[in-house]
Length: 156
Image (cartoon, rainbow, N blue to C red; front, side, top):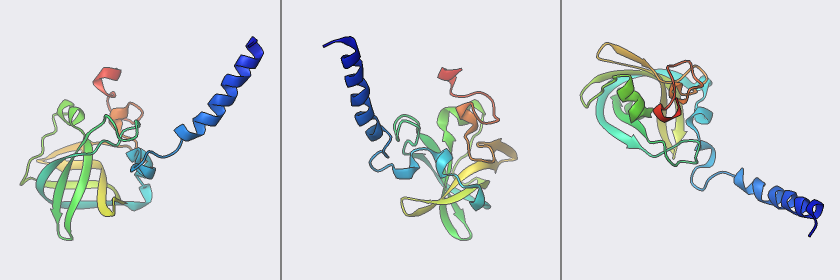
């Protein structure tokens, strides 16, 4: 096979394969990245008592693989609500500690995820400490593209 024909065969093969790569990950749907799920039109502030801490399923750009987020179940006047914070390494780096029983105030986008209401926190306050997690568009500050300090330690 000569080079132009081989090149054309590769280009055609990639054109047929690549659209499949752009499809949603099974189970991930539009929730592949929280930054895309975050809706500035649904921003609200909630306050309540932390019932428990949770490690949430990965929602990183790898289609749900890799990045595990920390969250809390917050008992509010309207019932319990899961609040997505950020990756554990980022919370540790910022010396942000939250534990069951703490009073927490969170501002973020209230959305539905897996048929449950969830708050993707932009800013949280606990024990007189405020932590910025995302910018006003919902882009995580730990990603390096937000207005926060740095990204993941391995990417700096």
